[in-house]
Image (cartoon, rainbow, N blue to C red; front, side, top):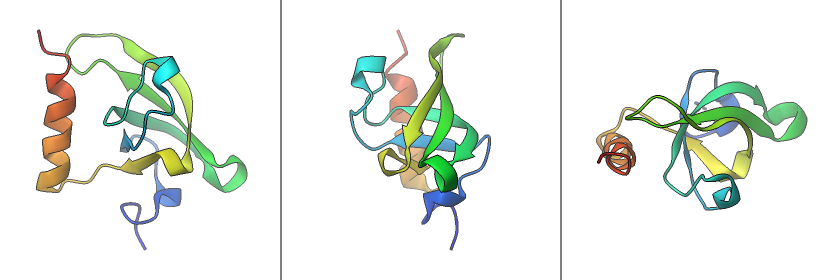
Length: 93
């Protein structure tokens, strides 16, 4: 099993994508991409991640707990790279 099929194996600095709008009240929506800072899934069921503006410097959410069911790890697949581009395009002026 690998982290792309089993997100309990996610590592620090992995890119993750949100699968739902459960964090909309924090300014994070389905399709937003963040970076894992720490994996606490085994013990608490979440990762700590930061979500940065991909175009300008600054954070959307600098530190937030994301539950295991609410994300997946971004791979280098063509489909995932398209999602990364779509996310960046949201912030282009």
